[in-house]
Length: 382
Image (cartoon, rainbow, N blue to C red; front, top):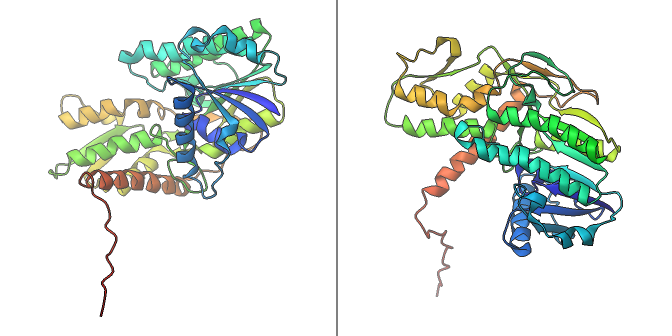
């Protein structure tokens, strides 16, 4: 049985990776989870995996007792763990460390939190991996460490990059940092870079994600509520000529696991779709399925601060992070075969499921507290 240590198991990508590839008895899975006690952490991990499992057509989550949830905090040295923890696990053969955990925040006001997780947390993860005797470290980065860039993106570390936000900057810094740290510790390093990750391909449901494509849909869904009592036209500004790369979460998980299965122990690898989709086409599909008929998607070049409405300015600010991911077409190179095929028709199915999920949440929120469906009472007849 191979031992796997893993951070971010209650996050979107980490939980799908566990669900799709680490259950079934072949792996001893040790999950670092934030929480006050082993019982609370185990419950949190259990609930996350069962929610993830519901987004697939075949139910696979069973035997969760085989997972070990370890109360910890990646922002603390040694994850806040006692020396006895490491002593009890010293010498485990064939141990591999997967670091999924990171902060997805991007605003300047959250700069310290982002740094603590994406830089400080990574330093601590390498220390923990070394103390546990892990021979290989898999670092889950992002395809957007290239920053402000258009054109081909190689599977290599990026130098002299300019960035759209502090999130991208820290993830790029982290790749350079961990390369140095693993070299110093004698640990083999694999860096994997997903693009914009969406739900599982079998059902196209969000699968627990609330960021990326679904965060953008959520922002426009909020806009729909604000426009409920007005017919005034509104413009949404973005990169109308750019293309973006979206990839199903199960394909990303398979990409990562195939590297692990094939004993790949070094290199940078893109976990991306085989083709891009037009930003304008995708945005218009979202507007269509949200029934935002009075909103027009226009180029950034047309935005005028002086003439824009207050709502347009707020919308531009609230969608800045999503716009940065689509600013300039990036062509992600892949050494390990073609990426998942994703055209606009296929992506529309994910949009439909994303909108359906928000509409369902709205309907549930409108239910009066304590309301339950009443079972029909059978009438007795003489």
